[in-house]
Image (cartoon, rainbow over all chains, first blue to last red; front, side, top):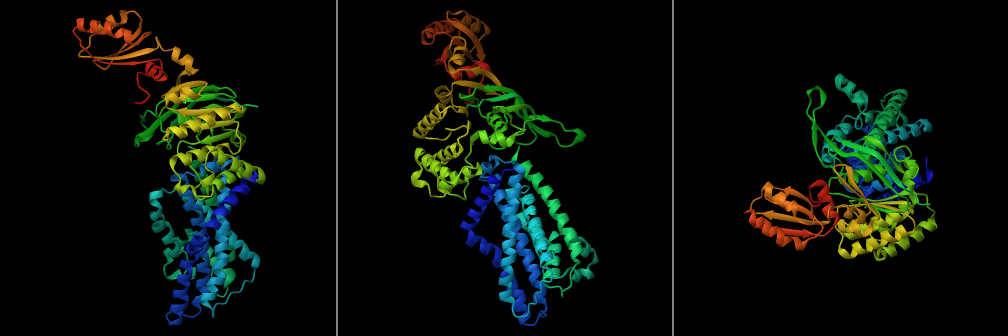
Length: 256
Length: 338
């Protein structure tokens, strides 16, 4: 393992992220904030939704922001770099094994996902207040959950970014991202699906479900949520699965 | 100490289309088992063996799709050979990738510059990937930008650069970590003559510093002007190898006369063969003949008379002097430009 090379690659990604800061900011926060405003303020304020919905919504919004920042931050540059600009080739020729370049991409994606998640909390709280009751009873479990959420997002981004053709980016959104959000228990708790028993079982293949439910369990424990242990086991499973798939796809893509 | 390059019986078969810049030449269809769709197998390298001595400028010359880029791909860790081995110095390219990557610098056929960075940042980050210290990488970046006449554009994003500027920056980047072996894949393709001359000077200078250079080209002039030794590659294997002078001397006679007649007979070819100075006669198409001879223009009157006597009017003549182009044609029956 060559730490100097690894560090230089992280520095490069940080440098590029700084340069694109405004674009990244809008990309990450605009959509969740609009959601929070419409659902949390407009709908609740006009009485279409109960006030308790605000607390239920916040963890889901954090989960969406983190997951999509992580996927986006890794997948989009990789799609362009492997297929169009080929700019990753310079890093593939750096004195480090190819797997570590993929790990670097994951770490950079996780950092961005964590920043997105932690920044969306105060922003959403500002829009939603008053009426949001956040209580972090176990900071350690909360930290573990957000790291695991950042992990599966970045690993998922790696797997997608190395598998999807440039001309299929639109399809990735409509076929992967959209169903993930709507069946991700982001705008409702998992228990709300009990009237659709088959769907309730099916959505368990969606890692975003565990992200939303895990954040609900640690941030607003008064809302209904899945057991923390089940959430942790599922998140570890998805992290490992997507890491293995992502690394495999990356190596396949970088050596012909 | 200078480092050599060696390959032993390299084979590479692509199961789908090869990556851009490494297009295989001849497509074979092999039926996959189980009655599935026939799988397209593209052999790009077919037992290619090379030995490039430490400190020499070596050229791989061949037409598009001959396997040149795939060879460079294997030697630079980017293409996994189906079989065979490759070494940079004493390091097995496939087994000791990180050590190999320290020794090599690569200029790709298609620019792959980092579009998110400025010209200077590209050089600085590249050096940082190789663990070069901050002061040293800054000094070296400035020196190379100056040398490649890019100082004025140093702080601009490379997206708007012209093809020639991108190519110059690619070479500067490959030199940033002072590699022992420099690979250049079609370095002068698409360059204007002025930039090409600058490039040649820079390659020669780098070689004089004791470095090994391997370049691929389908430009014979470039191969002739730059390379100390050449391998002529076609269909994934080496068909001739040596210094440009030796290779050219190996063409029978040296001169090539490409003739075209109104009609052509076997009898005519035999008579051509009997002319003084003619070394070899080959039929080309139904109405042509390629004559290898040790003289050129002075043969024409005799050929014209001979053809007229045989009732086959001589309609077109092209004479070329000893060249690598003729050598390629002699070995493959095809022109490099085909």
